[in-house]
Structure formats: C-alpha cells, structure tokens
Image (cartoon, rainbow over all chains, first blue to last red; front, side):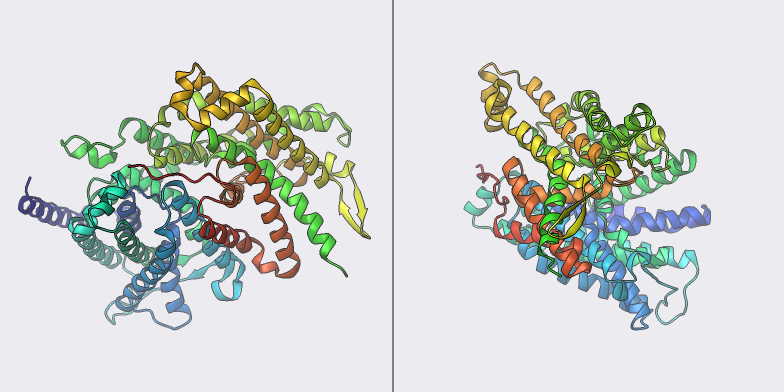
Length: 316
Length: 298
C-alpha cells in the first residue's frame, strides 16, 4: 500500500464515518445521541492514550488532562463568566497542552512501568488538590457548568447542537491525530516501541518523539475533557481519579492502536456496553466490563479495529 | 504542646499499615513483573473475610484474644484460595507480554472483584470493633493513643520477618531469587518456575489480605475500601523501588512520617504530600530508592 492510497482511503473512510454520524440523530432517540456525544468526547482522551501506547508507553494518569480540560471550562464559566465554547474549548486545549509540555519534560526519561507509575502519581496529585482546596475547586462537589454559548448564541440547551459541536471537534481531532501519525515523528513513535537505541544510532531522538506525542496527547485529552464538561454540565475531582485513567487505557486497548479511528470505535462500544450493563444488571455492571476486558485481552489483542482489518498483526 | 511524639507514633503506625498493603505488591512485581492493580481488592476481601470470621465465630465477647487468630485465618483462606485461582486462570497467560497487558488484566480483575464483593457481602458496612476496644488506650509521652494500631505494627514486623526468612533461609526463597534474576535460566536449571509463580502470587495475596483483615477493626468494612488503598501502595513501592521489600519498608516509613507531619502541620496537604514525595523520588531516582536499574536492551 503506498502513501497516496493510504491517504485517500483515510479521507474517504473519515468522510463516510462523518456523514454516517451526522445523519444518525435523525434515527436515534435523544438519550442515545447524548451517549454518542459523550463517547466521542471521551474518545479524544482515548486517542491521546493511543498516541503514547503506539510508542509502548502506558499513561496510567491521562485522566489528569481530561480533568484539566473540564476544570478549565468550568473555571472560565464560573469565575470569569466566559461561557463561549469557541473560546473555552481552545483554551482548555492550550492549557492541557502546556501542562503536558511541562510534565512531559519530566516523563520522557521514563519507560515501561515507571512511566505508568509517574503518570499515575501526577494525576493523583491533581485529584487530591481538587478535593482538598475547596474554595478554589468546589471540593468533592465540584463545579457546575450551566449552559454555554456557541459563536455568541446563548445559551445552548439543545442536545443536538451539543452533539454536532462534539462531532465537528471529533473530526478535527481525528485529522490532527492522523497527520501526526503520518508524520516522521509519528512513525518514530512506533520505532520507540521496538528499539530505542537503534533510533538514536540512526541520528533521531526518541525523547523528542515522546515529548511531541505527549504534548499532542495532553492537548487533545484537554479538548475531550472540555466537551464532557459541557455535555454533563458538572465537573468533579472523580474526573482525575485513577479509575478514570484505567478506563481510558481499557478503551484504548479495546479499540486497538492500529488506526486513528480505533479510539472512537472503542469508546462508542465501551459506552454502549457500560450503559446496557448498568441497565440490565445494576449490581454487576463492573463485573460485566471486567469480563469483557479479559475477553478482549485474551482473544482480540489487536482490539476491535483488528476485527475490521484483514492485515495480520505487525510483529510485537 | 509538643507534636513531635504524635507525628512519630502516628507515622510509625501508619507506616506499619502501609507496609502490610504494599509488601505484597512489590513482592509480586519482583517475581512476576506484574503490577497488580487488583491488590486493593484482595486487601478488601481479606478485610471482609476477617470481619465475617470474627462476627461468626468469636461469639458474644468480641473483645477477646481469639479474634486475632480469626483475622489471621481470614487472610490465610484468601491467600490459599483466591491467590492460586487468579494466578492459574488469569495471570499465567500474560507473563510474556507487554506490561500494559499485565496492568490491564489486573485492572479487569479489579473491576470483577469489586462487584463480586458487593454480591457476597452486600453494601452494608461491617463493624468489628471488638479487638479495637480490647486494646483500649496507651499513654505515651503524656498523650493517649489508641492501642490497636500497635497490633498492626507488630503484625507488620512479623510479616516483614516472615518474608525475610522465607526469601533468605528456605529452599523456596533461593528458588524465588533465581527466578527473579533470570526466569529462563532458572527453568533450565530444573526449578519449577510455574510453581514458584503460583506460590509467590499466593504469598502476595496473603499479605494483601493480612493487611485488610487486621485493618477491619480500625474502620468500617464497606464497598470501595480497597480502591483508594491501591494508589497509596503504588506510591510506597514507587518510592521504595519496585520489587524491593526493604525498599517498601523504607518507603512506608518515609510516607508514614511525612503524612503524619502533614496531618499535624498542614492538614490540607495530607494526601498531596504522599504523591508529591513519590514524584520527587522518581525524578531523583527513576527506579526508586532501592530498585534495580534496568539496562536498555538492543
């Protein structure tokens, strides 16, 4: 497969998916449109996790950027009276990206389990700070995000408008992710996973590739958090908790790391399975998710994306 | 009032509790190279089973010495049943794979066990205050401390000695050391590596359950009690160095004392201090204080 056809098939696939998702609300009920919007918004964070997973790095603390994005939006609305999504969402992206740049400088020295543990520790600092500093963060109650305006039209209540906002942002994030994966730095990340020392012998820098991935990963996770804050209308420290980070890694592996579309597939399936598990067996929904995850790990290690592609798995 | 004795004593009892919950995690990682996210759930199951045994078998008078062996029995039962079961059914398949797979397998196990506990024990909290009341108050440096936490200290020291003895003075311990340094070579030399894996995981599970069982009298045993424990244990083993039991002991003391100091001096920072310490130590020594340096392989 040469570069041009990959690019074309990506564009066609992306446009078809976008058109399908844009038409879906015509046929579906409100709650499932909400669920889809939520899944797509969280998918941005999952894509962030996937960008790092492709380099063999497990971020077990990505809920940090998710929460930073969400709290940025909540602060802007509550403290500064800025309810304009076109201002708040990009700002959430920039702030999460800056934080990722600062923390990324520390994290690029770490690999494997230590990378996972340090990311976990950083996210838990954010969690405890959000809980303990009540005056500034609202403590465990969190903050509410009451409505927002879109391009000056206030306030947005329609679930449909929120859905299309999420969809457009999703398309943008997918595009950024795809461009990054197709860039030399993106390819370098795959090489980081296989053998770092050889990369350095070839004159490239593994830590630059990791840092760049980490910054982009943090920035798009911030976007995901901002969108979820608007969708749910409430932010709380739980967004930064380690279980949330675990869920993101779960969904990343569920979708697979083979494509920039995989995180969204994983995220939608995850939200649907979770929703139905909660509905049909309220006392055992976590158990259902756990068993589901085990099945994916044992029988479909390439994730759901692997089901869609004929191409055999690349060597580990 | 002089708060130094309070900080010291609170710090040491908290450190003992931390050691009980984190020794198993670091031991399991040392042997199996798996960071067990479900460790907190095993801790909670130990607490539930210990509490159940005490409520069921200790009879009317729960303020008696028989409660302590009952708590221990709860931990032993968890170690002997759940440990081998989990290792055989779930973990054995993922040893040779990426770290993310081991991490996710135990995360799945965590989700499953959290619900299993709700199904078995319901959502009502269990209270086992007997042993706590029995030990009453201890006066030290003119301040009254609860007596029971010192039992935790003794249990932690005994558990540490047990681990040390097993690792350094038994044939099993030597085999474990071999497996840790080179699994393949150990197998080639005739060591039954799968058996070592099984016993090691069971021992780690027992330690988690032991921590839980002896914590039961201190707190109400309720759903979710293991969820926050696990990240604290990660902080301790991250500071001490993964796979190092001595490191875990030092990590516990550092974290325990730092937290006790923070509680007395800057209460808002109670938990922040723990994770900030972890970050600081990892930045200074990425492998933790006592962790082995891993060479990059070509």
